[in-house]
Length: 306
Picture 1 (tube, rainbow, N blue to C red):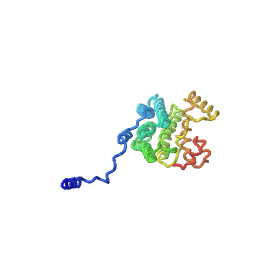
Picture 2 (tube, rainbow, N blue to C red):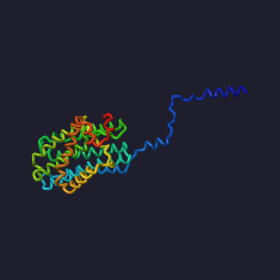
Picture 3 (cartoon, rainbow, N blue to C red):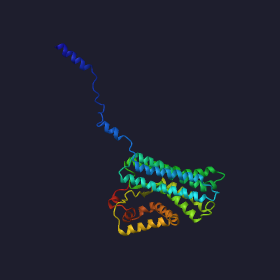
């Protein structure tokens, strides 16, 4: 009996001691595997794919444009249309994702990749095609360098946005740090559309087009600046509006649809330019005026700005 007890003690002593420093096994291991899967929502990413498709088509139209052909202005207009259409898709994908509660890291990254093509590469290539390559004939590298500044600053702007969104754990908050790249592309495209309408026949050789590289360099600096712009993500389209505002909005949209070819080349540059300037005057206006412009609640403006 005593020999049996001694043998049992030696057997227990020879076994390795449990590792008390080892972390406990994760609870709900199967659930953690499920949560680690990518969340790819169909409708928001479909809108982002439409954005990317429009950017690609715009690039192909710009490549096809022959500055010596009679159809040059028409082809450039088609490219501008697809850049502006990409802006609409970009506006819709974020709104659809927020309304359906389907925001995801995959959607944010996919959106940034599409934005870099549609709002970075396409506008830069557009300005180089119709302006810069004729200005720097002997030193073509200078024209490419000026166009590349816009693309690089746009990529830095998107990378910074993604990093800030990841660190905050949200979709970027109610403010943008720096001028948004879709708005920058919209300003370049709408201003080009305005110059086409201003001097339709002589646009390919006119002097007005030389303002585009200056605007593009300015927008490059604004995209990586620390000027804050409202994102209008808090704008609730399902909220009730006063009767007068509803009537004005319906009449304005109807007027745009009926007279789009005559009004859009003049209205769009004003809208994008006003948004660009608003970032500078925003800290200097009253909170009440900001609330009316940005259509936010009082409690939203009472929170500290990000």
